[in-house]
Amino acid sequence: MTAYRPVTDATAWNAQKLNDDQSWIYRFGPDAIAELNAALDEVRHMPITDIRKQDFPLHQVARDLEKVAKQIEDGIGVAVLRGLPVLDYSKDDASRIYWGIGQYIGTPVTQNSRAHLLGHVKDEGVKYGHKTRGYNTNAKLNFHTDNTDVVGLLCLRVSRTGGASRITSTTSIYNEILKRRPELLAPLFEGFYYDLKGEHLPGRTPLSDHKIPVFSFYEGKLSCRYLRNAIEPAFAKIGEPATPTQIEAMDLFDELAGSRELCFEMEMEPGDMQLLNNHVIVHSRTAFEDYEDEDRKRHLLRLWLRTDHRPLAPEFAERFGPGTARMGVPAPEAFGLPPRDRSEGSATEMSH
Image 1 (tube, rainbow, N blue to C red):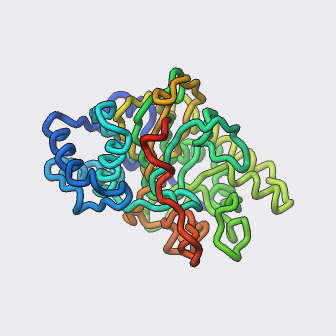
Image 2 (image 1 turned 90 degrees about the vertical axis):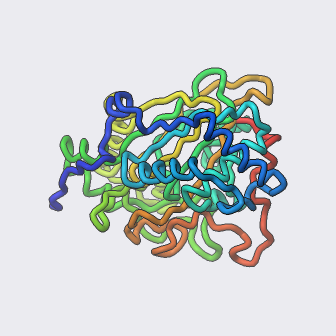
């Protein structure tokens, strides 16, 4: 049996620690807002996803964002930027500021097969199911990681009730499994096949061609990859049911992810930008009820950012080969097919 060891670095936090020490929340003061507005003036004529770092000049804010990036990579893995007066901007201009800030953290990658780089998280009135991504519903979302280094959310509008953001340290989940049921770590390190939900490379199978580990030690760092909603359909497609031990391991992972001790729950405010290191944090959302008025409905903007800082095991590659696991979801133009629009509609038309 492998001799697993506890991990005691900054990523091993619990809910009480995040509540007691909120140095992970950064607030934009008047000077920072003025600097962001000046940068916005430079890019108002540009399509949002054409904006590059050099087009969006920041000075003091850029120095603050260096600290944020370090906190995400080498600290607890989470940061919230608070204080942007998002209701004073059009949704397009708020999107430009968010995109510009993202350029100082990493490189946006595609979030779906339509090559969307700026995602709109909102209820489209559909039901959560196998062919529907959860972010287009008002349903509770299970704890999961996304297929990128950093996931960012900008809150434009909040729901009438519910919709709280929930985050949990996967390092702490690992430590707790090691303490309680160490024998259940083996199936999690072995991993599972993933159903790619139709977003696979042309000519490839609709499943990952190898098992993707939930936990992986690589070059001294513990990383996590977990999406049970893609694991369970893969078992069905393979025609081979999960073993009782595999189910027990995933059940314990989910139980700990949502536990009162480990899970930190926060109500996002309009203007909040939440940035999470996908390799050390799982995130979820509570169900919500929305407003009737279209412009008041819950609306978040999402970025998947590639930073390439963290060394990852080759087995984390999903749709692409080893070393290119951070490239997001394959887009049609990568294979000589006509490209799609890179934003999910005009931000002025969307609500979340």
